[in-house]
Each structure stands twice: as structure tokens, then as C-alpha cells.
Image (cartoon, rainbow, N blue to C red; front, side):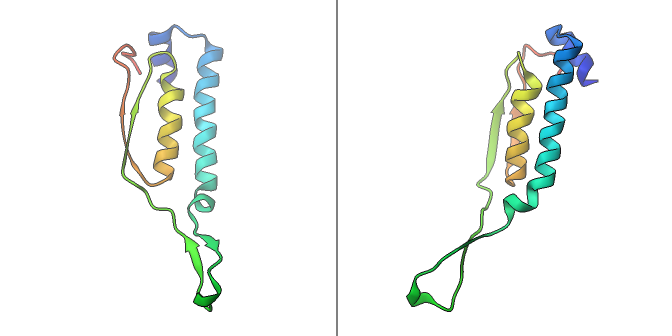
Length: 103
């Protein structure tokens, strides 16, 4: 369905559609594979006076991410930042281009 939508909006070739969709799928797979590693706490050293304690940095999501999509590469320029924002734990609001009717 996504390939047909890209054809309708951009009149792109099969090669272009395949590259754009495959790249988005590859990034999703990579994010799923590395999600645990990205979100685990990072160990940090602490001052001597605070021993025997331990220190770490825990990354927390900061809120909502707005992604405004272009008309020429709607899949790449919306999906890629959306994957990163969701992997970081943020909520995502995206606005596709009004010129990309089918996507």
C-alpha cells in the first residue's frame, strides 16, 4: 500500500520506492535490536568523599516531538525521526505534507 501511495504522489520508480521503504524498515529493525543498549543506565564515577556509593546516568524522555513532513520524501523524512523519538520514549505528533495526498 505504501508503494502505491508513493507512486500516486511522487510518480516515483519502483527502485526509488524500494530503496525508501527498505531503508525505513532497516532503521526500525536496528532500533528494535539496539533499544536495550540505548536505554540502559550509563555508569559514572563519583567523588572519593561519596564512596562506597555508585553513580549512573539514566536517560528519560523529555516530552512530545513534532515532525513536519515534506512532500518529496515523505517516508524517509517522517519515519526516521519518528523511530528515534519513540525509541527515546517520547510521544510523537507528525504532520504529513498537504501535497502528499496518498501517503
